[in-house]
Length: 287
Image (cartoon, rainbow, N blue to C red; front, side, top):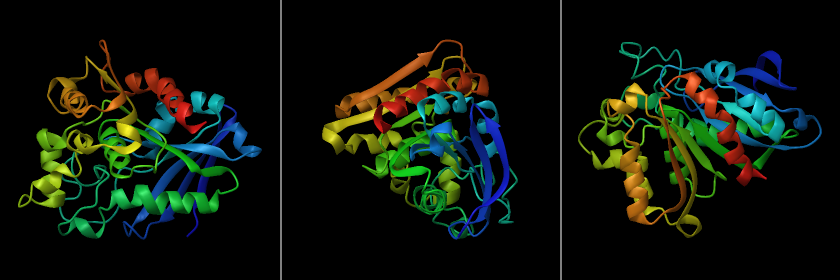
């Protein structure tokens, strides 16, 4: 499977490639953006996967997140997957902004009709990176990968890291959904994609539950989390970082840094303000 390059954009000395391909995992066309820093022209560079939040496409953060300035300086590529399949044409797929299209939640759905297409966990952890490293293997180092994300994408980054020990060098998140089995967004999504008969299944996709059993690397977790205190979704109990912070402490997990940023909201003003910190966090483990 090969990617079609839709456009190539010069930015911060590197190139942003807007790519598309047909996914065997989602059974739909998928768009993805890839930022190649200047260093990739002479050596293989590590990769930071950025997972976006609800309603977003690969374009939102690559245009407004300002990760490229720091990634260019550090010599790190950024991979921006989409947030869900597009065009599966399932009943109810576009009825609400927080479920269905644009809201894949980086999980594999287990109930129909979603299970046929909404398999973003497998797409992000397996199909996409394998295809990217195959086509861009002369520029990207498949042995050095970290993961980060915002909101729903922060949930994705946390859970995919915790479920795949050793796959990623580090993890970070901006305003992540930390305890989805206990917040309105997560309850709606998990009920829709997993059903309600076995709510224990929900815990397998919840960072607050997963971290309780974290034993990898001697119980150390290379995690940075930023949350804005002016974030309305934080105030409404959608993010619940305190629940994750409590679980980390009770489990004796070390190396985690929580930062509550005064007055910042949920927007790209917040993301772009701390993008450099998250690239530098990844760089500590990628190099």
